[in-house]
Image 1 (tube, rainbow, N blue to C red):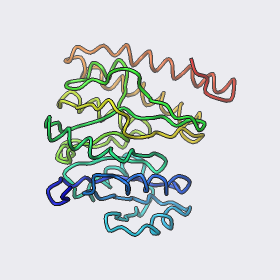
Image 2 (cartoon, rainbow, N blue to C red):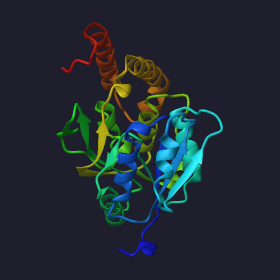
Image 3 (cartoon, one colour):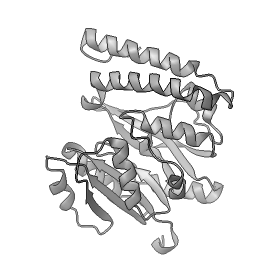
Image 4 (cartoon, rainbow, N blue to C red):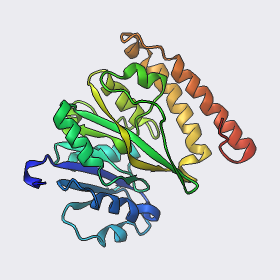
Length: 265
């Protein structure tokens, strides 16, 4: 593969005290069989060993930046995107992983079908068990109706043409659902391509299952539904499905409070 003829992909990695799994995440980028990428590492006021771990890697494609003050996740992503030089943008958090063919599969599909946004299935890693996250066929095209009924795009699988971020950005008023908010809006404007094969791994651990995060998710989703009813009316979309999901979140929060863990149903 001749790197010069391949579009540059900018990988956004925001980090706030991400030392525990950081080395694994970076290694999953380094072993990509698609070579023309840069990793934009934004250290968001970490006070652990994240910077030291990152600096141990010797690869010119790994680019280090840091914030002067702490930014919430979505503002940090907006800042990192401004540093990116690639034609396409991907996202990888410090606790997640990519399959080594992730970028190549997506760039190949973009070249073939001319999509500006691509996503894929992904694995979930929980209690040392790894399983495919979605067991249904992932749709392509105008998928807004599908997303409202069941949201199934993991940001760790996304590849988005950078030009899109001229007119769109992550809404920094959110702490949990900024990905959902952005993709719902993009889905009304763009055809989105899907790859059925899992190309990444989402790691579940205590931090991302906290009761505080569940409560924030509930509050933000309630606000999102109220704010976007009129926007999505013109697409004849019924937000009842998101209200049902909201109810499930509230049950999950209650179960965690009672049993001390998230109960599956």
